[in-house]
Image 1 (cartoon, rainbow, N blue to C red):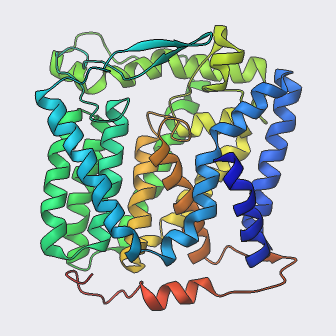
Image 2 (cartoon, rainbow, N blue to C red):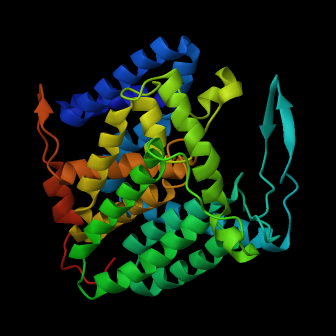
Length: 392
């Protein structure tokens, strides 16, 4: 991906001109890299931290191609959806031989597939053809959202129902919540009620930021110990994050980095597994992860992303798709780092960022040598608010 991304980015800049978003991302990444080298003292860890962000950057670069070739992607999305669905449903009756398999690759131990059960209640977390249950659930959800936006009504309704069944089998709680949320959302959109839903993204991003960063002001949240197995199933992972992982991450960022600029590129997450295993912390929250990488600028970046995406719910089918992608990114981001937890989530983050910025008029070109009005082309071809729900 790294070999493909560089030439693609050059082609994109040559075609569009050097615009504000590319300059802003380049500046943010450069500052984080300098901070990382200063704090970590290891260029290899900084490079690994950049490698983690490649799917996100790839999403930014290919977003325009995805939008312009929207209808051509439908057969591929259907094929991927069928494979993802089949993987989960077959896994319900048959355990894959690679589940729980660990093997050595040089000096590194590699896990071929997670074999976990939910806490409190012994229910297997089905992974389908993926390595983890949440990756399977997220793939199915994103593909179902895409197909809902692209297919006619008599096709997308059974797709949506089957997708819900597979997501429930994975027991991925936040993804189940997202599925139920969108099911209710589309009922309101069908009735023409779309304006108030923009506030949903603002609430989600505030939740992402407040949950972990509020621990700067309180030592811990007392959530109680007397819990039934059903309650434990719902809140066990959140309790682990609030009482251990997030406080440890904040302490690491503050003491081994800086409260303003964070630790820098590669200072939190999977890069630490190879270079700082003794203090490795995944962040397990998108705002916390961005804070570790970019400091307070990362938090501002996330807030700006949510604000721009919040206005996409009224921009036709593709706007609805982007709005739902942003909802999933922020909802899942309450309990995972997003940018390194899932390839689909990271790609969706990049694509929705590009589209939201483009449609919000946030692209102001620096040194433009060729201007192209992509927005009007997209609007004229795809984004008709009056388009009937049953239209393709």
